[in-house]
Image 1 (cartoon, chains in turn blue, green):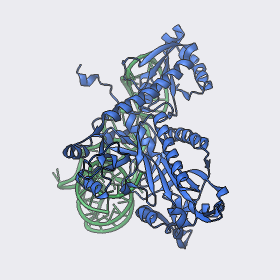
Image 2: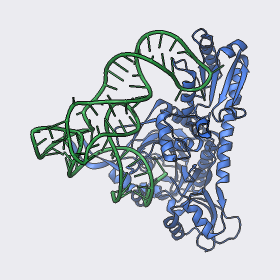
Image 3: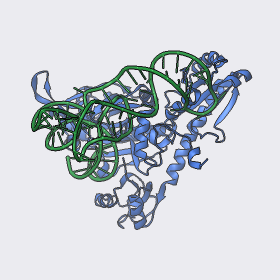
Image 4: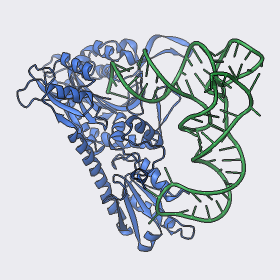
Length: 485
RNA sequence: CGGGACGUAGCUCAGCUUGGUAGAGCGUUCGCUUUGGGAGCGAAAGGCCGCUGGUUCAAGUCCAGUCGUCCCGACCA
């Protein structure tokens, strides 16, 4: 048999390396994360996909709460007159705002924007709520949907309507606002590392990549297998820009009236797109255990004359669930091989097999999704009495291994470049994250973009005097350049 | 929003050039045999040929418009 024919055959999922776009879309649909809806640019988030979102939500929300934030909910619609107040902000979002112009059968006298983000409506409310320095800080987050009239869309990465969380805080001083902005950046970084198993670069955005109306924007940036970067979350220090536009003032301890300093920050379901693309393989998804809606699926193997495995399985399921493991029993009338393939496409981290052999021996077989079939450590057989401990341990191993693989990819595709020609060529051919000393000039960035398609992803402090690799001017920062999603 | 491709069964597609009875594979349903890597045989169901209009005795097929999808750019989380 040829090497080609020995490869596992996966129906409906093209090889990841051939065409990442085709693979990505096929996997999202085939794993039943999303369906296309009869609405342009929108998707239905199916139960398995929503399960991913719920886990992201639970993990992030816990971190927000632990750092003193509370959840609230603000309206979907924003009156046009309010939206227009912050000039830079309006200009940034104008091309992608959708408008409600009619209510019932009557034309509205004032158009209502469907929120593309909620700085405006939340800022307006903060102006009413905040009077004294004793009212600060205000630390509020909301989980909601937003709408942006996108021209080209893909599941999770860019849809017109998407789910996200947006935090909005108000502070008495610039230093406190900056501290908050960075604290949230750390939370996103930690979430990405420990839950999504996705190493990222965190840093500040260049001027041209900054959020409309922000003083500084910070981001975490992940690297995708095709060498393009994916901005996975942003945290904005808005300074007093929004406070001045929406008149958010407070009486300080020194009896003077001052504008507050605000921040805003968000992570969307785009993060799930990053997880799908970064971790998946030719057999489908590989979901980090901490995000997986189903962490372990029990597949009983029965024969017509021997159905004992099916009888044993519910007790295994109960044991796992009692230990807090998100387990599922697949007792459908399908062949085992069919179920193996099905759950692999869906990226369930562990499969627990119990068949006649296991029943005889009092064991179960645990198979890891992150490893290839036959790879060392891919499967282990353990006594039934040890199932909870063994599954827990294996889940941790999968989580750690997915991170390690993604980390290896990021490190091996980050290039510290000193020569201009090499820099431009690596930007052009999507080598990965191209790390250079940079002059921080918008003209320089614009030139690189027009030449190669790459822009700065984010910046961090310069460690030693150097010249900008792109243009030769004195460098003022280090920058990661890459083409981006 | 520019360039390109495409909308026919749940899915992947053939049929269109040259107008004349709606097709295949996979999937689905039922039955029997199977079950440690996507089973076999038999039977069945399943279609406003994206939508609107035009040409024609006759349109899946030709023409126009429209909506949607995918790819490549520009824009964006």
